[in-house]
Length: 141
Image 1: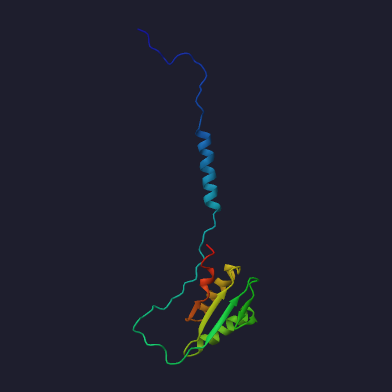
Image 2 (image 1 turned 135 degrees about the vertical axis):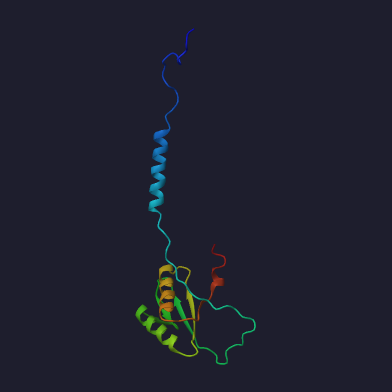
């Protein structure tokens, strides 16, 4: 009785895929490492809309913050620096009742500028802040 041991000793025709898989795994890990982590967030406590709440007796003062496409900041149509804006926020937070702040960024304004304004408002204790003019961006998706 003879035992067959796999025969002729000819060349292997299958491709060795182990190195290809190793390279793909290394590339995948490199891509995962290079993806920036989105950790920036501004936490705001927004008021809950209560249908039984009485409107305030005093009409609140409304201040407008505008950010144009050049990332210039305007407080009630007057150009301001971030330092001046901090002072306005501190002053607004100390008033009773606190005035409303309406933020209207241009569609081309940088997110960094708008988020820094929101963070500054939160640091200084401003609680009545909101975005206006969002209907202009409804068709930009």
